[in-house]
Amino acid sequence: MDDVKKLVTAIKQGDIKPIYFLMGEESYYIDKISDFIEDNILDESEKGFNQMVLYGRDISIDDIVSNAKRFPMMAERQVVIVKEAQDLSRTIEKLAKYAENPQPTTVLVINYKYKKIDKRKALYKAINKVGAVFESKKLYENQVPDWIRRVLKGQGYDISPKAAQMLVEFLGTDLSKVNNELSKLKIVLPKGTQITPEHIEENIGISKDYNNFELRKAVGERNAIKAHKIAKYFADNPKDNPMVVTVSLLFSFFNQLLHLHGMVDKSPRSVASALRVNPYFVNEYLTAARNYPMKRVSAIIGLLREFDVKSKGVGSNAVPQGDLLKELLVRILG
Image (tube, rainbow, N blue to C red; front, side, top):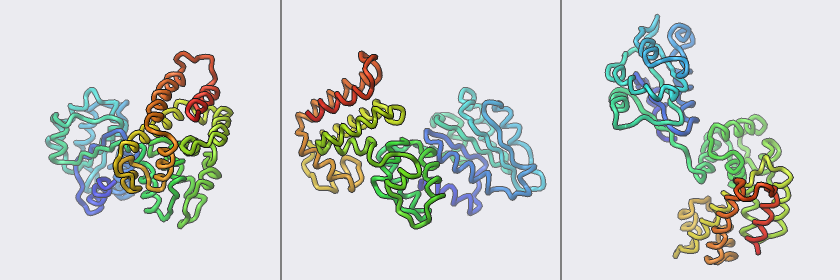
């Protein structure tokens, strides 16, 4: 996020590079930077003749170079944006020759999503000398709640830790998906609002009471009644609550408990740092560690491996996912 701000700030201050190569697993920032360049480098009156968008599947490297070498018409610069450039991955290194001596009046933007170019090769080295290479890395799941909080804070909103966690568990780490849902919330909620689980449930459709987050909490507390209620809801709504996701989350949870049992310093700050969780949730982990001794945690991790295989259809094709989850909970909770 800081790298994005630096790059955008430099453009605003007039430090405009002849080539921007935007690559990496996280498409959200690639789109953000590309859209900013598309919207801001040229005036509206200049865009008609001096701004073009090309798509990797429809062109060759020669086409990119040919367009990039054109001179602008009645403007200081032209902007050439290549979207879905990853479709040119087999020939992308051929762009190195142009990158060694780019047209100074062209701003060439390459959107190379979900992949990276080899930093040891000529293309990367050439662009790095004269332009900007930006790598958009995928966030880990435990980093996304904080990303949500920072994005909303910058837009005049706040969000409770539980609400942020609900979004992550339902939408995963795809920042574009998360941002789309945040945009829906901002339409209906005034600035200054703290977004709560109730807001998430009412406007996005994620249940605040029946989700993986609440199931994990119930299991940690050894609250069998609540856990089985959630399991029944999951069984009645299998498309929204696939068992493979639930097993993965519980596996991660018990692995964290195993780590917690091995810690000497179990102060809330140390636990939050070591397990990479929001301090708000530390008490849930400490409660679960008291309820599940280390030996039991190890046994449950083995059990979850077994059910992970079953949830993918190996050796249990005829067993409904809901029944598998109920059996798993019985065996975990004892």
